[in-house]
Image (cartoon, rainbow, N blue to C red; front, side, top):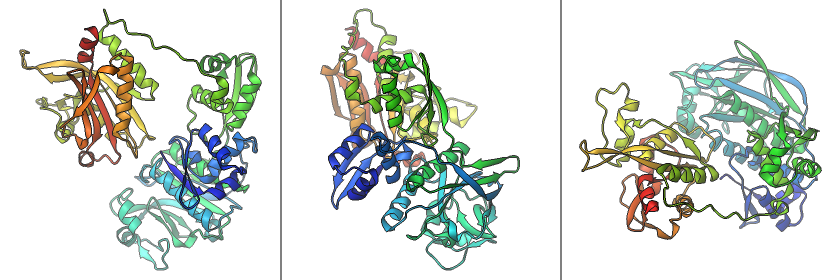
Length: 553
């Protein structure tokens, strides 16, 4: 999870809360873990989908609204002084531009703003591959007319950030640290995306800005450019930054973006309307939402929503423009629960339904595992039994059957473990918001010395987490939950494993009693690097066939 660090006194000043214990309690209610570190620093661990809270300003706004010190109101778009003409770069075609005035920057806040930018780059921006952000001093901008296009790296020059010399773009990509790290992301032959103002390069996304528009402690008006490979993501990140910078009360200035085939205005900061069935709210929270509608209204306002209308059956809410994590009515229901307070809703213990061991089927076992994993936030996959041979060779789980005359290198082998399919999916899902939690229940082929063709089908379950940080213990906890639901937790045991796919000492064979039923562990970084996967992965896999036999006995 992303961690925001700031001086404790600054966060207390910005939230208006003088009691540190009270502040930590409110942050805990908002799903944030906190820790007081050395040097009067508070570390706030926020949810990965709440990118609006990746900054000190975003955290402060959320806390102030929860306390009733502020109420949400979307900023108005005062004017659109910027004109951006786009000749879409081939590898990074989308751009959004806006500015915020009267931002309060000093040395401390400038440092926090740069950290906020990099936090977005690393997480939501996928290391700048998906989204990249440029921050500029608006008062230093040569012209309000901008051009975004591919430029020739040998014929175009710029002054890179924190330098005074002019270099060719090729030299910027090869000589600067940022150029070496990110120069290949959008380079297309001898062409690279650039933003120009009055003929001067002010940004080379996703690599580096120009020193011409460098932010300093005295900067008060900030121009924001966001570029990327996905139109919606670019606009979401722009809105998130605007949300943070308007904490200081400045105005928002927009831009007219002219593509070859359309014209749009950024930012789009109008709230979204969402309707909730009060019966749906009651079902999830165990309250009479129709009778307690005023309590629901107050809870929504504490979480930053505006209630548009209410009748006997439905409530219509306006979702803030910066809440990109709100995708379904159940997300709003969760915010209602947070706004009310879980301690006010009360708790009820529910005894798990015991498994009827006699007559239990493989499908019953699979459904129990499926329900547990979905309840823990995993998303189910349904993939082909065919995989790329490369995956099997790199992971080296077992001898893999190869398909003769396969139509494609992507489907030229049969999987002997669901882990092979899961890792292949994760390799192609590195752009997705983290953590990526997925599972699959499906067939694999396993060696069988007693079978006429030496192979048999076996039903298995596999679940995995891909995140910037994920550990063996997460898989162990999930495995224990599944074993408990199956009534096998007292027989569960882990023993050292020797599977080459995993990091040595960070994996285990899974036993129920004396029977080997699966494995779990942290996938080796060397294996991930060979597959081009940039993030850690932990996974576990168990045989439903064997679990079914054990339960039936």
